[in-house]
Length: 408
Image (tube, rainbow, N blue to C red; front, top):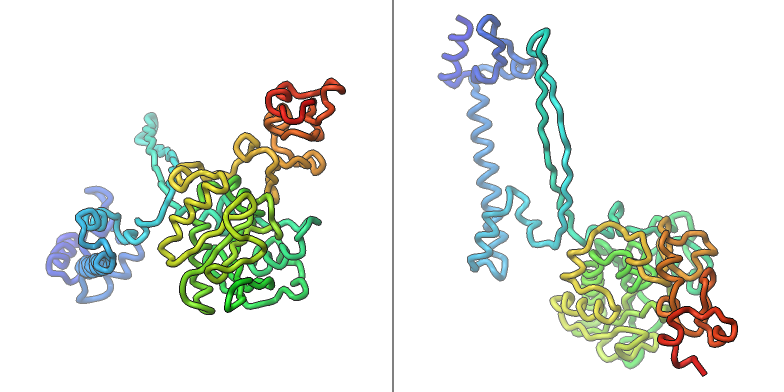
């Protein structure tokens, strides 16, 4: 009788549907869960109908938001844009345009059910979870390419500490602001911009701006070595934000430059932005010491990144996006002579002194003159590339072919 009453009320829309109750067996009674009992005590309501109405409203809102975004897009009228819009899953449609990488994690769940005193049935189900992360997020705190600054004694270290304070990097949180460092900062998502104490030449307005990443990268080649997949997206943001920040001083095209790792003034990757046609830090054009170009619009950022990556001998944007996100850990991938960020191994020539060489340093970097360079001996190597190695009888096997200019 109780079950008949509940089904009758459910059909009349006056209470929770009978299907919301837990039905154990033909010999048991309807047993409402505590939360269901509370809901069914409210007279004159139908919770199933309210859930259906609320779900319909949310679905309509999601569709309207998607159509609004598509109509604002410059490619809203293409067939591909419409198909991509309606193919995007649920309310995550706005993330479909960002460069992303996908990580798949598989978990196995085992469930054991005892059907009688003598029989046990075991079933196993596999659940696969896919996580998609934009490449630019690699340099965010917690990302594979977010590195702390390490305060060590080296040329430009005081200025690097100033950069670190501007960036809000956790590596200098306990260090004081260097004298003369405090200045206005424009924070961006993964970078910051501030005024350069050095002034630009050949400019009516001598203002010079610096844009740096919040994550620590010593120079542009360091970025290419330790975060190749995230480098293009980070450089594009720095170019766009440097351009936009300079518009507060003078609207129009700007000149932007980056030091090479062979010729850095401060050991923290930084982008210079000055007036179009100006000069700063003796960077007159693109060459071994620097890359420079004119930027007339933020839309040019991606094409300029292609230039920078080629100049720095790093992978192109498409090639970089296909590389693993994981931080490299061998000199064969990092490159001989390249230092490492805090907490990671190093392939720099002085890594034996700091006892932080990568595992393949000896075999990858100290066997040939092609690896070490001509004209010097590297500590830890079993052979030499110095001019007098022939007399000493310790020349590397490729000395004659690689270092012919040094031979008498």
